Image (cartoon, rainbow over all chains, first blue to last red; front, side, top):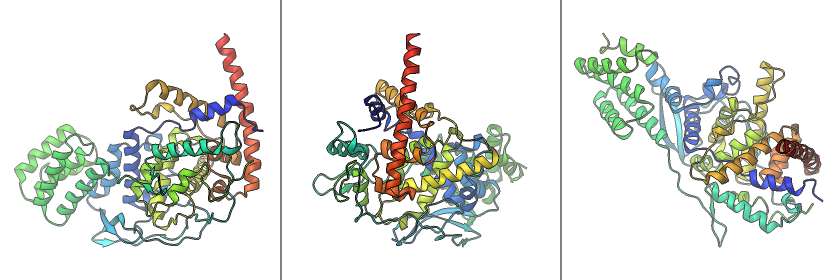
Length: 278
Length: 198
């Protein structure tokens, strides 16, 4: 006999799935994750412990993602460049997160993936603690697999399976009908990821001494993402690119526009000190 | 309680299907499971002020460890084990700063999906809020086991894998959790019934 009444079972059935995150919330969260990955141990390692110090810091908006990712790139101009490369090995960026999975028996399974690489002065950093903590990887084939749902009144296993399949479908997993092979939709990178990546490319070009290419990439960014939350970073980078090209008039005009729109903030200080601001 | 062989589809059918998924990309894992991680964090008592960071933390770890995920456990189980550690770390951090902290109720307004039927969504959200409220009456392992078993419909083996509890302990905590949850639900129904009468 179940300890739960039919009314409570009904409540659980209605509220079990919960409400999905909004698209913007999902994107913001993902952007923040990418930002933490990109900026490496500092952000990820202190993320949890920093939680109580600033409520505003918790919800990373698109704006703060841009700042987080690009602060080191554009804000100071002194820290490393963040870029994405394709790897056949696990990500080389690691974090100092200190609460991970408990058990260990991992078998590394190299998987090509887009992985961020943090470079400083053109030198790729080494992993900090790449294999310090192993994931859970228990064997399940020999153990019995009791289900809690199966002892609910009027809830046979078949119903549970349907419910789970629905959940899987809602979560984006389509299980093949005949062989059970999951048909997973292809990944669709968020525009935020593209925005950030494009802006990083522009900075890369500028850092590599190719301001013309940087300006082209910034134009592309402005064309593709005219309402981007990273507009201040883009505009500031444009000023610096003009300066690097010794287009002082253009730099001055761009700096004027930037400072009109953004009179305060760390980027403003840099723009003021650039050739366009003098 | 009925025991089902591991080879048969169970309430974890979703998980078993995922087990067959080879080399899921980070994007795939994120898109498929972020809702699960988010709602589970909320149900484990992580307040609004911290939930984004806890969820981010989970996926930072996922990004780093994904290539080592073998698929011998389900993705949900693996993610839940990471989440449990993130939540515990978060609680330790919060308690260091505020000894009386336990967690704040979530703000459901942060969650939305305009593609759904508004009325259905409102009912779903209300039910979810009520569940979150009732979960406050469970503590420690009972809450974890209840969330995994009753809300995520994970098996005893999966819960055991994620929590480190043996299956006997899983069952005992689940039974105790069900009793506590039912007691709280019954009390809430009476209270709300009285409110409606007034």
